[in-house]
Structure formats: C-alpha cells, structure tokens
Amino acid sequence: MFQSVAVDAERYMTLLSERQKLVASNIANADTPGYSTKDIDFRTEFENASEGETPTVIEPAGLVTKADGNNVNLDREARLLSENALRFSIASNFARGELSSLRSAIQEGKTS
Image (cartoon, rainbow, N blue to C red):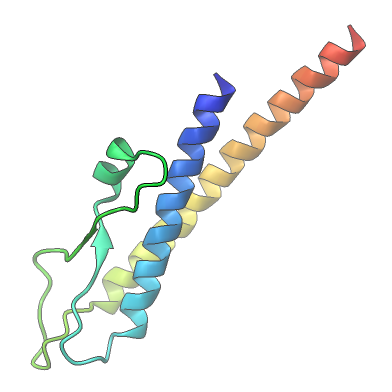
C-alpha cells in the first residue's frame, strides 16, 4: 500500500517540477518576440502518468497575443508559480507524514 502512495506522490511531484520549469521558461521569455506560452494539462497528465513518460507540453488556448507575437501573461504565470509552490508544499508534507508513519510502524515492530 505504501509503495503505491509513494509512487503516486513521486509522479505528482515530478509533474509539479516539470510545470515549474515551463513556467520559469515562460517568465524568462516574456519579452521574446514570437514566443508562445507552454504548459502541461496537469490533471490529465497526472491521471495518465506512467513511469518515465515525459508529460505532453501544450500551448494554452485563449491567451492574448501581443503585437510582437508573444502571448506570455505574467499575471497568469505568477499565479501558476504560487499554485505550484502550494501544491509542492502539500505533497511534501503528505510524503513526510507517510514516511513518519512507516518509520513509526518499523519502530513498533522492532520493540514487539
């Protein structure tokens, strides 16, 4: 059971890491003419994730394109950074709690 939870947490955190890289790239290219915003469909990628598979990068629809052809919206990217940080913090705390429970079970097994 723990192994399944650990694998899911690992996949979740890997997707968060991939999204973080894309958002950082979007912000770095906010002034690059012709640059298109890149992202992943987080929910779909997590539901369909299999080990070692790279998430599919998409160009989000509905973003306003500036005169120079760039469609990076810094407000959107800042929101995604905050959301990603919160999700990563929650996932880290969950993983830490699961490890603590496992450690506790091992300790109880040693004393029995």
